[in-house]
Amino acid sequence: MYKLTNVTKDYPKGRETVHALRGVNVEIPDGEWMAIQGPTGHGKTTLLQILGGLDRPTSGSVDFDGRDLARTRETAMTKVRANSIGFIFQTFNLIPTLSAQENVETALVPLGVSGASRRARAAEALNSLGLGDRLRHLPGELSGGQQQRVAIARALVKEPTVLLADEPTGNLDEDTRDEIIGLLEKLWQDNGLTMVIVTHDSSIARRAQRLGTMRNGKLTVKQTV
Image (cartoon, rainbow, N blue to C red; front, top):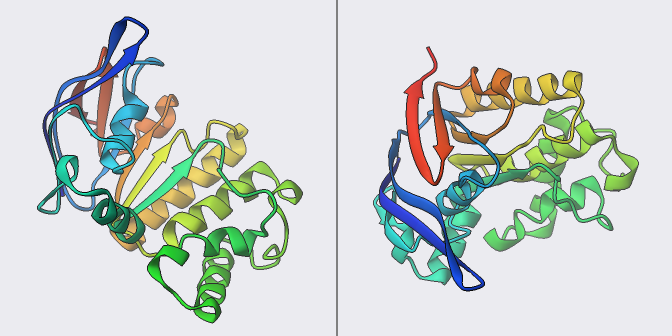
């Protein structure tokens, strides 16, 4: 479970200070799917990065299962990210010189998983997403939808409890978008994940249990049903 209390994030920009987050307060229960919308530049991605421990707030607390991520040492934070949090990005963030299977394996390296086990688990994850015949393909040899499936496999192969996605369908056509969101929804249900998705697409946001709206660094949340 997440509990954010009075979270702020400031960035220096020249002689000015950008207030990316302004006193964000929110609780995200285990197993919930929350979508986050809002205009560009109003703090959505900053909030997601703080939830994932990729960035630290300027002030406030970020409680994640009893641990304040705002005050966790970086070595411990690395372990939290490696064990508990899966990330999916709009641009896929695949390593172009590695095969689909090798890209998925990278998520298991920080966990100290043996080479044979990494290969087996990566192959199993890709096969479960319909990519069993693409294990040795490079990202450049895959369609956008296939690349995003590889990215999803990489996020889930370590069996995280949290899945954070930043515009996961932003580079996909409408049909592929629906396919990927349907897949994420099924994975959320089947695995009991806590899922937070940043999206500009209202048709995706309406499928979540709650919708958060970021404006000028402030978050408001409402039920979608």
